[in-house]
View 1: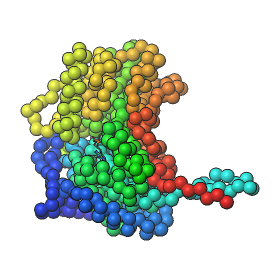
View 2 (view 1 turned 135 degrees about the horizontal axis):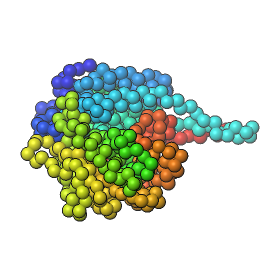
View 3 (view 1 turned 90 degrees about the vertical axis):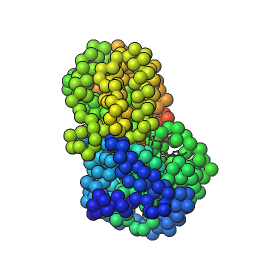
View 4 (view 1 turned 180 degrees about the vertical axis):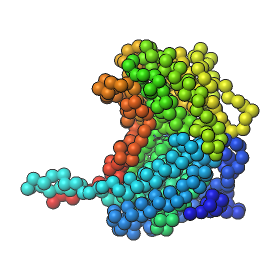
Amino acid sequence: METYDALLASITAAPGQDSRTMIDPATGTAVGEAPVHTLEDLERAITAAQAAQPGWAALGHDPRSAALLKAADAVERSAEELARLLSREQGKPLNGPNARFEVGACAAWLRAAATTPLTPETVVDDGETYAELHYKPIGVVGAIGPWNWPMMITVWQLAPALRMGNAVVVKPSEYTPLSVLALVKVLNEELPEGLLTAVSGGRDVGEALAGHPAIGKIMFTGSTATGKAIIKSSADTVKRLTLELGGNDAGIVLHDADPKTIAQDLFWGAFINTGQTCAALKRLYVHTDIYDAVCSELTAVAAATPMGNGLDEDNVLGPLQNQAQYDIVAGLVEAARDSGAKILIGGNPDTTRPGHFYPTTLVADIDNNNPLVAEEQFGPALPIIRYTTVDEAVAMANALDVGLGASVWSPNLTEARKVAARLDAGTVWINKHGAVDPRVPFGGAKQSGYGLEFGVEGLKALGVPQVING
Ligand code: NAD
């Protein structure tokens, strides 16, 4: 375990190395100098991965699982330093479902990947035919991630890859490289040399990784637009892909839900990580009978939930991570206001304070075609749309070309499950939204991507299936 300063110094750009100053989105002050790695650095990382992978694969599942369990312990030993760096670079507060929570999830997902059983499956055994299904390592896996949950998503990608006997080259988002470099540094306390490397370059490095002949699979989490680019760059080498892309999750509150009971969970379903979450609730459909009550209960929760500098233990909401995302959120709220929608709370950013803070914003009486509803806002602004019949709510929820998550809210579980089955989304939660679990498969429908992460399905996705027949 190192101090915060020692950990940061160990991943900071060397003198003379190309670097980028990472700015704390809460204060506008410098966090550290991130190295800007080059295509040559990428080649070196891939060569080292190719050299380390066969020995790692030959160890078999049990020693690899043991190393991942030790890596989880290493994350816990450095948890406070990692959470502090994550809070400073990403902006999310230490407290609430934020930085400490994210670091805790890294350890939990490493342990889950290490302990999920995966044994060869006997597919047919009828006396004449005997066929078994095995999963072999792919080789070297590329992991390309976003800036919203940079550590946790990196672990989602690398933990099953390592468990299955692969080496991994990670390409972090250029907005949050220090967080990922620090995480990888800590994990490498327990892993063989060369097996896992983070190459903190720009889009060019991501593109080169996605097209590289030595990479057998890309695990990608990010925008739908980049996902489409990766499909194209991976085509010539027929790479395997798992794509977790953008979403615009709908929540449907049925007529019999109790507004007061569900208000906190609705709020956090939408505003976790200040709305910068792939599977956050981004459009809320509320039955007309309880519309006003849901709006007022949500407004009360929003007013009572503190936003500010993440290192202040009182705050549980933070800034937008970057100016571009701030501009998207501000523009969508302005357009909604101009269209005549009603701002229940928020919508008036204090432009004199430092940092990319956009206030928690709830927008009512808004048309379903408004851009704040139809586009992914990825920030702290939730549109609340009134509906009268369940058919109408389901049609609106299913109208977009993305389908990551969705939720249905009602004390009547039988009815809620019936509505859930009608929604086009990879996961439909009931009376919660966005709760992920390392044992439960997670993936998108429509243009939210393909492939599953987590659980045994997630492990299988990091192997090459091989049938032994005879
Ligand atoms: P992004 O697509 O802009 O960038 C993601 C990563 O891709 C970065 O590391 C970037 O450098 C890299 N990249 C960019 N162009 C590339 C190319 N041509 N080839 C290869 N790599 C390239 O996404 P972002 O803005 O960092 O993340 C926000 C988006 O991610 C949102 O749309 C959000 O919904 C989505 N997201 C999805 C999930 C999920 O699980 N489905 C989780 C988190 C975020």
